[in-house]
Length: 163
Image (cartoon, rainbow, N blue to C red; front, side, top):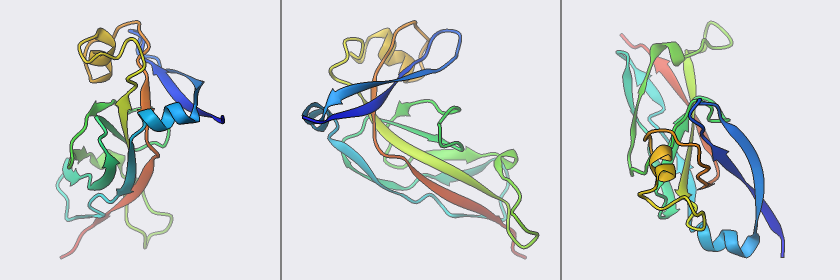
């Protein structure tokens, strides 16, 4: 049996994030991870935007994820797990956009998206426990909830002004 690593996050009250790796047996992971992020296609152009600008995070999944997160960073260091929505909306701030490599390239922002589920095998992940409430944006506790995560997909959104 092949072991497959996955990440486990701990969110202590001080706000730091500690990441370490554990392993699950491949058949166990397949039983628990009955979801996948198959596409991520947010609105690709901000046309004559007024900030903050709303962007619908269009995506497709297989299975039944219960959580999602979105970030400007591939390591998701600024992201919080939120209850899953089929069409979540994010407010893009002007300060998030970076200049293009040349004067001809428009300002842009990259967004990364991921879905997940609370690990049903984790003792602390009953929906009513402090650990589950913490990962869904509730008060922090010194517990270690586990999230099984999908693959990550990223997309670029550009700013365009048209007369």
